[in-house]
Image (cartoon, rainbow, N blue to C red; front, side, top):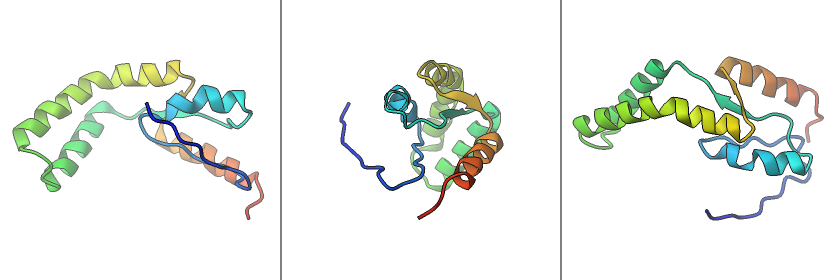
Length: 111
């Protein structure tokens, strides 16, 4: 895994998102930078449909490949969520994550 430094000095908050964001939870906690860590918990079927529609619209690969890949990701999703929560992220629905991040932003001065 590659690493690279980033500077958050002067920022009241930073957000790391994506499937690998949970990889930095423990280090952020150790450095006193962690205000919250969340892994999105979404309805798996809806995620499958949304991903398939996007990939088909973008013609990323042949439809049969996209369906097979989508089914594999659908099956793997519980294990991905378990891994992220095992790394310190809290499983939460998108609406709850947005509410919490908005609260963090409201409690910190901007600029």
